[in-house]
Image 1 (cartoon, protein in one colour):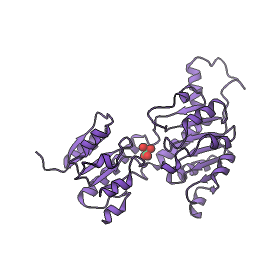
Image 2 (cartoon, rainbow, N blue to C red):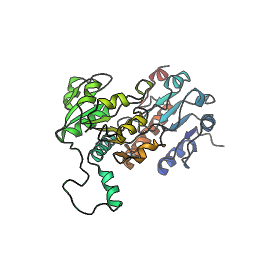
Image 3 (cartoon, rainbow, N blue to C red):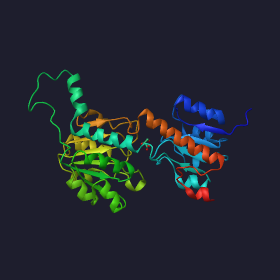
Length: 328
Ligand code: DGY
């Protein structure tokens, strides 16, 4: 039996990066990529000193019940709503995520989804594939909404929100934002954004993009009441997390054309998608791919690996969430 420290890699990763881990650790890996049940996760975490996990692994007191040797859970994701941070901290385990390395890729995607939604790009493609395009027409082709010279409202103005705002400047958009706390003036200036209340944002924006982290407080930040404040010509894009939007209320609003269209990369209960959304043409659907370029996904895994190595070697992980554990 090897005397290398034992670790868990809970989801499939790039084979060459797995091979690197195997040089230093005895790795329990899940290259089959089947999602572990809570019981399997609890079992797999027992006897390992570190674990690379993702949003699919809920790390809470139950998952940690037998993880007596565990020093770190390293999420391969910037969002960490799959972590019960107080429970992880109480267990004396370090928790880390992967900020920064995905900011630009995710902001690019947010902007792409916004454009696809406003300009009806996927709907148009379905239309062509269905053989419905028989002539160019001034009025009888899918007519969309402009982005240039319109108002973009961003809810959640962290690094990714600011990245989207900077891209919007290139399109001559007027950018307003709402956030838990207002940005320093220099940051507002750098992304040309003006702070407004959530209500003002919903009422005045032509396009609304959601980039806030998911917490129990912002569950259904956008529901029927908020959609009712939006312009009938507005679009809504969610690249944040499922649960931030009430998908049933959104589907109903899209069906009744209360807003123009929506673009969704994340869903309540994903990979399930609300069945009513699947029937609609005025919604662009993507399978949670905002950070999905090979370069960025590799960088996310590499940062998670660096966090894991640091914790096991007794160094402070670069993106530590619960600094209390390090101090203790
Ligand atoms: C993130 O990093 O939070 C992405 O949404 C992938 O989960």
